[in-house]
Length: 345
Ligand SMILES: Cc1cc2nc3c(=O)[nH]c(=O)nc-3n(C[C@H](O)[C@H](O)[C@H](O)COP(=O)(O)O)c2cc1C
Image 1 (spheres, rainbow, N blue to C red):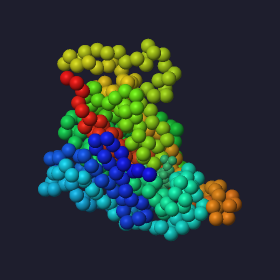
Image 2: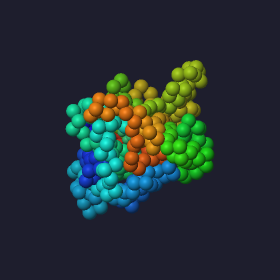
Image 3: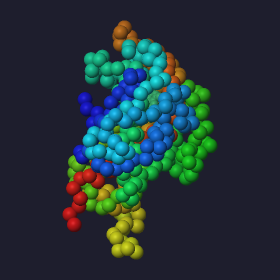
């Protein structure tokens, strides 16, 4: 089992939801970069528990302690290690889960894989809490990209099956979406949604055909985010219903003579290689598995079917908190790709 991503920029996530802490080790980050640590903390706060409507009541400061790799305000080129200590654990909430797995969570599958040796508390290493370390690494990557004119941005385009792509509120949620989440919470239930992410300013010619393409590398890290169950690029699944004449993006020279496309159904990637247009993808996030209603499960001790009532504190909708995580994942993937050998001049 490996929790390491990347070819050039290797990001390892460690920790468990209810252990001493979570964090990351970033190997291969370019030397001499001066991160804005206030901006790193502000970015991590967007993901932290309690940051969004419908969010869990668990409180965590999510303050990263930098153990190595940043000296005198700049990156040294050696591995950067960051630890985010856990504070607000309530492991007793999970005592019963060791024997009765939560439907849609990792409890059952991981206990089979490990012969029951996994840390069950709060989802252990499979918990959404692991994304705090991903956000730390992503915040550094995003700042490094921004210094090169490459900007990562995102928006929530749907909540509970309802299109909110026209929404401009900074929270990313309109009043109806907030009510959809609240209604789910009141009913002891949860809802999912879709985050769209774009990376603009990425030069053309990066990536590779077939197995090592930009889609492959972005999808690999985005699928590493717990609860992501679908990723599509450009026109994605909808593109399969279009005609070629509609889906093809016509080339033209812009005012500076650069080759661009009039539309971006290809999502900035042609044959696994960047085209110079923004990389655009969408991540489908499922409803939070842990819901307050009683659910059918199985008791692994008795070998009988049973009813499970999940305790603990859970988001009725994790999409607003997952949004910065998607940005972080995109930034890490794109910086990793940018550290490949440059295109032939
Ligand atoms: C930021 C974030 C927070 C999450 N919080 C919770 C939570 O409070 N309760 C829960 O059951 N799942 C939560 N999840 C989702 C589970 O971790 C995830 O569904 C589970 O590990 C199973 O993995 P899978 O859905 O990818 O198959 C969260 C995910 C993210 C990204």
